[in-house]
Image (tube, rainbow over all chains, first blue to last red):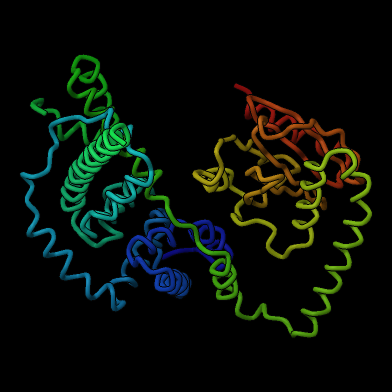
Amino acid sequence: MSGLNQKDFEKLALPLLDPLYNFARWMCSDADEARDLVQETFAKALKGLSSFREGTNFRAWMFRILRNTFLTSRTGLERRNTVQESEEGFDDSVVTHDTPELALVRRADTELVQQAITQLPEGFQEVLILADLEELKYQEIADALDIPIGTVMSRLARARGLLRQKIVQMLQTKTISNAGRKIVGAKS
Amino acid sequence: MSCNWREKVELFVDDELQPADQQEVSSHLSGCAECTATVAEQLALKKSVRVAANRYSAPPDLHAAVYRQLHPHARVSPWWKWGMSAVCALLLFTLGYALWPRSSGKDPFVAELVDQHVIALSSPNPVDVVSEDRHTVKPWFQGKIPFTFTPPEVTGTNYKLVGGKLAFAQHNPGAELLYTAGQHKVSLFIFQECAVKQVPGGGSTFNVKSWSENGLQYYLVTDASDAETTQLISLWKDANRS
């Protein structure tokens, strides 16, 4: 049971508006839908303030409400099956964990990493954002997404492996096309 | 990675280990080049994700919509709203007129900061991140401005942090932190030193103080007296001294 009143809620929740909107935009990929989702999240959180357990992470609680609200939306319902399928059909052997590509990762610019994140299966995307951007603990992510902690760990490892692989591939493609352009330029 | 520490190394990077295990992995890293390379690579990847995933900011009308949602009874009659808008506009015009000839002649950069302070005084939402906690206000600026700073702890002093927002002066991004000092409001602006060409010499009816520290230029704008702001300036200087 929480001892939070509306004033406490505002103090804690309003600074989360940007992070929640950012997360919603990654999930919805539509600005209006993300906007509605955030507004609904605030309304639900305020209404259910008594269900917040003091001593737990308020940030994680808000993300959980956002995620649950999303799952009941049309896009969310459509996505439920997709996540399951993408996870079942995921071939771990294609992901390279073994070659540290520090220099390559450092060469990747923000836009390229954003493209690589966009290409991740959605279930992996949200775990990655909650862990690396929002810096939630594994248990908090598990609570927010309503999945076992083991799934959080495995999705995170897979997400990072896949992301690393995509970055390397994209950088290699970029290097080849740049080299091609240089040769064409030199010839002309 | 052939080393059988791999799982622990991943937990180490995510700060998920117990202190004893964390220590154990640290010791292992000092002797294992392979794990050290993995940690460095994973940290670089985490950092790239942190920057890249922070892609969208809530549009200003969403801030307003959420605020209205939280205060459904705060709506006022249109007549009152129009009346207040007219009074605010008149006040801003009068203040602007009073300040413009003196401040603009001296330093246009400071003149812009004084204007922003006046806007903060008259606005019902003077800041975008509302918090008395510096640990909430500081991270809000992460990724929004090209530098970082350390707000000092003001608990136990006469000052109270109200929050912060982005500031722009002559096309340069900066931070504005709003404090109260008793009944007075104090705006503290921070810009990169290289972005500021002239060192201000005051010249407005407001009290403007400026100093630089580690490549950043700080401005304090208020109607409070020197005696009321000295401690806040020294707290900021102490917190940001390297």
